[in-house]
Amino acid sequence: MEGTISFEWASVSTEAVLAVCAAIVLVMSAFTADRGGRWVSLFAMFAITVSLAVEIFVPAKPLSFGGMLGGKSIFGVFAIACALLTSLMSFQYFAKGARRKNEYFAIVMICTASLILFVRSLNLMAAFVALECATICLYILAAWSREKSSSMEAATKYLVISGVSGAMFLMGIAFIYGASLASGRHLLCFENFTSGLMHPMFLTGIIFVTGGVLFKVAAFPFQFWSPDVYQGAPTPSSAFFAVASKAAGIVFLGKICMSLDFASMGLTDLQNKAVLAMSIIAGATIIVGNLGGITQINVKRLLAFSGISNAGYMLILVTAILKYSALVEFFTPFLYFYLAAYMFANYALFFVVNSFQGYDDFDQSMSDYRGMIRKSPVMESTLVINLASLSGIPPTAGFFGKVLILIMAWNAHLYWLMGIMVAGSAVSIYYYFSWLRASLDTADGGERKLDANPSLYPTMVALSVATLILGIAILYFYGI
Image (cartoon, rainbow, N blue to C red; front, side, top):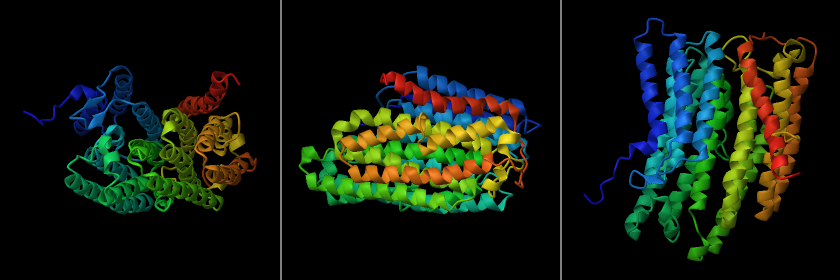
């Protein structure tokens, strides 16, 4: 029958593996006498690893499900890598007394599948369904330690903010659908976005959709929820919020901008206004993130403000392709290089944050890190390398990632954004190195005791080495 959508399940093989295995983990947990059975958790880790192999080696159609989904992208590998690192971190988290370990793995798997579908979506309604599924999972992950008031507070705030952002996204879809009826074209599909630029109703809808996504990436003026949620959520959940969720939003915004061709419609003035608006958002996000980080002594809140500023850096890439479509070919490699550097550094730091006694880290401060260099050289080295990467100190990957963004901004003539980025990076050195300075203090003045798991040291070392190798690799690649 004409108009019937064919269900090409092979095209969602990765997502299917994650969803089916998550269901199996839940069933196994329900029928296992020892609900904390380690072998169930190991099966979950194995399933995530299998999904990574499927994502890499099993091809998918460029278009499937009636054109609602695109082909596989690097983001699938990135998201599953985040799921693996979150799962590894959660072993230590649950070893410190937290409960319902196996179910946690299942929720991470479902959330990962949803984020992958969200980024692959070529239709706004499909994107909304996938995003809301991921949002529900993130809310559950934030509330996991529900016996702790800090976790419940974080979950409540995220639930309220997610409701607002989801309503904004859906309102945008409603406006765009109305413009579709007026134009006789299916404007919910990305391929038709350009033809909708002439419709005020479509433009209103795109603004709402963009605002809904900016909520998710904690960009200005929607960043206020991030520090509270990162602080109160379990540490593995905070890491997943900081990297996987933020990356999905940035990639999705990039897809929207790449779908808009202002020049073909003769809308140069509208393009300039859009570039100015996105530039202001990116610049304000960098400023708010870095100025907010200066005053922090709580390490999880500091990482939250760090995430806000890094969202601003990545929004510069989005602004660049919005201004010059010729730069689109550089957007994907530059963005994913930066995301890889950001992932290595953030997960390494969250592994360190997770290595203290007690699974409630909401009040962990810099003073707790005094004597770290004496107590754990591995963790101290992890702090030094990865804080340097986030600061943009060469030869770490973070430095080269920022250089690539500056190159993109230079070619897009976004000179004032370059100035804000350089100034923001300089300011960030202060609060990153405040944390580092506390850890280099040989006196043991911290109230918390370490509860490090030596079996996770290889992971910290691997992430730190990756932070260095990725930076050196780009030097070799370009023959510098």
